[in-house]
Length: 324
View: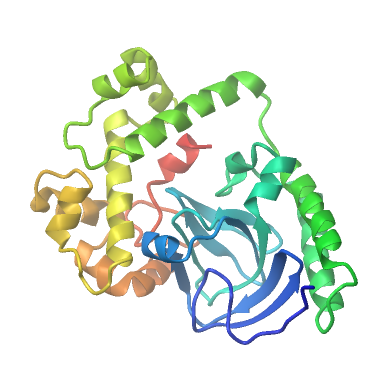
């Protein structure tokens, strides 16, 4: 039978130098993470090393946090929440140090109750304020009630907790365009997956994307022009984001910057370095050596909102609108 536990070593996906207090209730965990670290990352190397098909629900305490998840990015305020999949690249940051509740929920079980759960990852929809408050109060109550002892039947309680969070997530606000917009979203998502799987192909271009996805070139362009970007811009942004992930996930320099540039589809290193600097406001070498410092400084300079040139691990703000 599972037992409640309190630990000074974090089991969150976030930093190693944190003070955290974990409560386990069956197959879910609730952790209060407080750290002087201002940035944490779960990169592809960690995903490969420590596979984990759970979904992290993060609720900031006291001050706003910034997040990046599989190319989407944004801000989450205290009392709000964001869902991040531990099976995908994700980052979280806070100017004043990380301080948040972290609830880890089994992805498969959530998906059985809310089949569209993946559409809610990365802050795609706005939370229902009343339900978000209910979620926060539930987390605090569970952590306090079972601080020292496990519930009599932890797995049964875990089932009810997962059901409650599924209700909270399902109450998120979607716009009124309904089925037509969802169909368009799913097509975009399929095209995004296609592009992400071929970023290393230097010959990737709109005509080939349209042909392979059985849509017209004009319709492909319309999917992107809706949000004031182009197919080529989107591909470049994805390549730069992938390069960033490789750089911060390889601080010892196992791969050279040139190797990373070619791996993500750039034809020469000079073009890659110029594009990276323009996009993130820092050269690739600084991303590798000082990602944490750069992210926190960029977030502070941006005044809490994404802006062009801010040194943040967050992709162009247009992409968040595009994937919404």
